[in-house]
Image (cartoon, rainbow, N blue to C red; front, side, top):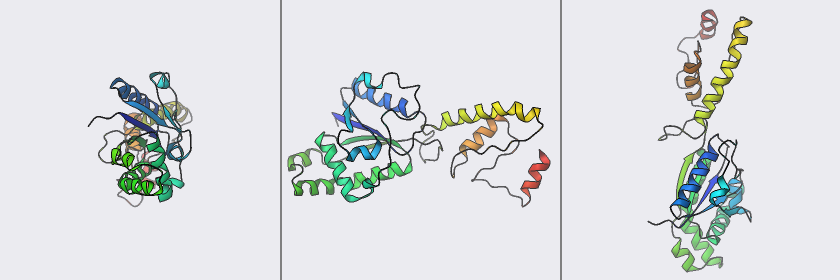
Length: 235
């Protein structure tokens, strides 16, 4: 299948590394003769006018060092509704886009899958309302989606390393290295809490990298009742 046009969008969070992913998508696509558009402000940009913009090679120049995402991200309650997704489909088709690359977490990718599943029904509704022609619907009968997981938690099955996890791990090790001298000089022990939600990847890898004495992770809770007392005794 030959792809002539695609759009890239970031949604949900702003995991480190999103800009690198955007840059790669845009420049690889352009190198292969594909027109690239960016959807600014996440799912909200699918509904608002003027948020779907064509990208050039220079559009993604000098962004690798920047945090967040240069095309913005925003949660959108309206997209959770059927009417909101119908409007999003209409706005995409006005730009003749039926290929989406979405960088986001579990909620963002779940929403994208629902959008894909409803696509043909949404097109039928748009044809019936006179918003698009039958010819337009027939030529864009399927919505193709590629999902890139942007999450520091590294908790997505089937993905070895999510976008942002490695950068988050480096930040944790830098912070722990910085406080180690303080802990030693004051003869104190620090308890460091890291993010990760229900996934202990960051805590486990950071504990190995920094030489922590104890690590508590959701997947393997302490197997003794008085673990607090044992931890204090060990330290």
